Length: 181
Image (cartoon, rainbow, N blue to C red; front, side):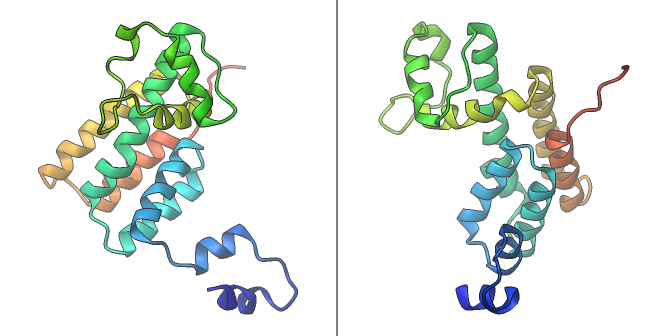
């Protein structure tokens, strides 16, 4: 893969991130995480490129929705809600959010995702918290509900899978235009 990149760039030239994305094949599991990260970062071009790459690799639409999109939106929503209601700041690193969560009353964290051993999956929420500032709470609520709508449409085969996923990603990631001055 490195030789392919060097050949494409030219000897002694800089290899860009875009070249790596275009020329180095994704692994299936890596692509799912790449889509989650792109959505969290609110990077629309990367989100759409990654979604298309996953579909070209034969990844199932429902699998993409349930493995990448829904957990990402859910974690962003959970993190944003806790940050808004409790005045928590976005952490510099995902694992720093754990200490903020531990200070909250048990009833405030009882609904958060857990690991197999029953302990809080603070890293996933912390990762979302690092990006939650790019979203408004109503956007995330709307986005989570939109995930449910797309899930229902996919189950009933109502529309093109690619179109449904693309529209959902655009709805989730595209920045809203504010009205007025």
